[in-house]
Length: 420
Image 1: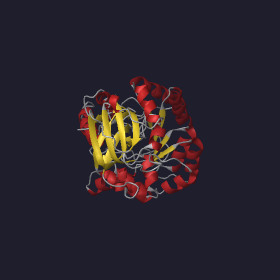
Image 2: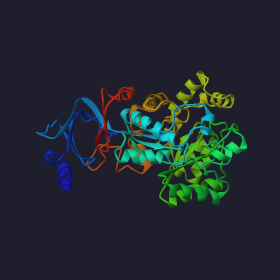
Image 3: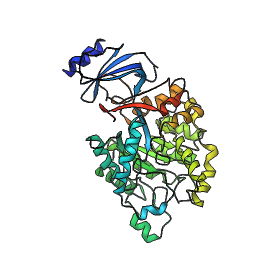
Image 4: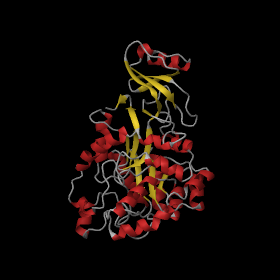
């Protein structure tokens, strides 16, 4: 029956008799690169889009979602979140809070994220070895509401670097070590294999120093070239992509040359770094919203002097590489670093991307088509088309004229389940 429905969709006719649910769209954006196409009828069965037909065709029976006064588009994708954590400068909490608490926090944040219109997120480097994996399963099996989670598990980092525990007594640091630090190419390959064994969908590394850790030794490269190449090659041999937290220009360049799939933050990316990203096909995930979060945190006195010094160092540079990256043909994918700021506010990134030089269409595609491609899921998500996952959102207004309309999403469906 599903094959008949898909055939009917390709022929331009609906097959409402087999559709479990019908969505009436007032103005459909099926593909963000093509813009709105006007009123349309979408049929959904068993979590997948069965047909997309122009015009409003209300069925005689079945579940109908009447969004005929709304703009409808694919669910949004955030390539960089920390869904099991909330904004905090209280580093000592790592020593007092059980890892399992992250699941409770994650349930709260997953619902907020979903209702904000984000139906897929990539969770990168949580505290706790399996909190995001547990949440991923709970959402997939329908126990709790939330987006599809592509989860990395703990970050792979150098000893004492960003991503490792810092700032405690040596015996406390050792106690809190999550077991994913490495030194040398062989040990780093081993950690990738361990992450794969534990259930990682993607590998995250901290390729350079970071802003919000107690590690205060700059923002340049942490791993050696051989270590990063080993990580990338090992991950790819296992069918896994690699995301690199990276701020400093030479660390970004080294990560791209090593074959890292996404460069997240990319704050100081210069021409050499961007050329390496273009040559190696690395995607750029700018996470501009993170810096709005740290600006607010600094104003509230949330951070330590070590962190405040790094925030002051980077703020004037935020967003500067975006226009040169686009001009050079580097693909920019949407990511926010939610968790540094409150979850559910992810869509502020659209406004920041446009302010940094992207067109509204480029910003919309960064959170749909480009992000789906960066995940290797371009045939599953990022469009509203027959055979795709039924990840769909609705809202008022025209995002091509004003991207901030996406900050108020009214209706969400993820994998065929309407959020409530």
